[in-house]
Image 1 (cartoon, rainbow, N blue to C red):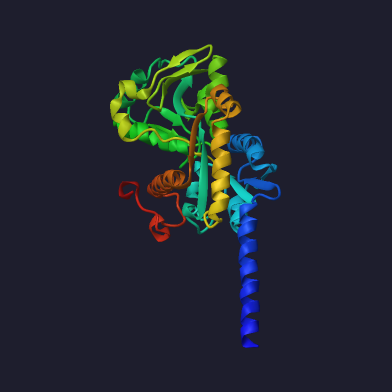
Image 2 (cartoon, rainbow, N blue to C red):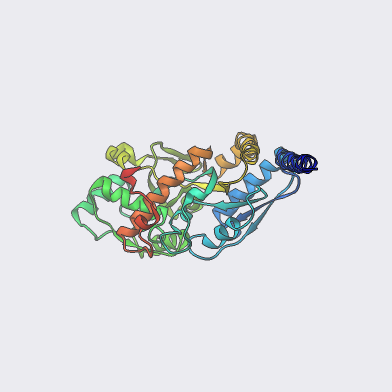
Length: 339
């Protein structure tokens, strides 16, 4: 009798395990939801809708994009997705800005709870108002050196990627700007147009229409390559005039999505295959070119390494600025120099 019971139990376990494996192999069997942590219409939302649309045919299901903004640095959306079963049916759409959520008290998790996919981002640049006296980055830096803290700079909010790029320029050129924080890229750009500040650092995707419309004058890209802008000409790289900037730059956007790190490997593999095929597809390539985005295409460990670096950089920069509620050390976040 005991043998019969044992055999029955073994059979049930075998069927259960087989069913579980088959379910993973059949993934996805239903539509997937991508929960973007920022509002509809923003850069992260637009990119997630694009990549989701392009991945869907390779998964034979729809990927429905919803928005769950709020909390601290995307913490509401991340917390929501992190509580859901790690079966690959709920993704989180995010950007580099979420990496400081933990030190700002948004939640108590590190970025390593995610298995990320980075679509890419638009490079930052330094621009001034069209009627500015500055015509080159060299003119600007010369004036800042001669008059420390007198040149006003806007670059979004404190601790944003644009602010970090401003700090990198200051460190790389041994200068001191008078940084004026604004709640986002749009008001930061408006500030330079109204004369409240002398320069702005935001992304090319955000500035392009103002540059093409003759309202902003671009001085330099904060990446190693110059950038041709239709109807404007070529915007030089800041590295051409100040090669020492390579020590601190570039600091690029990392916009994309993630699945929970503890999702099954088979789920990660299928998402990776669809992601790679979508990234290399002609539609996404053309969209990126038209909107001045640099496609990254990183996933898995490479993408995790990128987010770990950004988490460290953002967290410790915010600590230096006195803008953290939780010390990075308490969260086990190493300093950038320790990575």
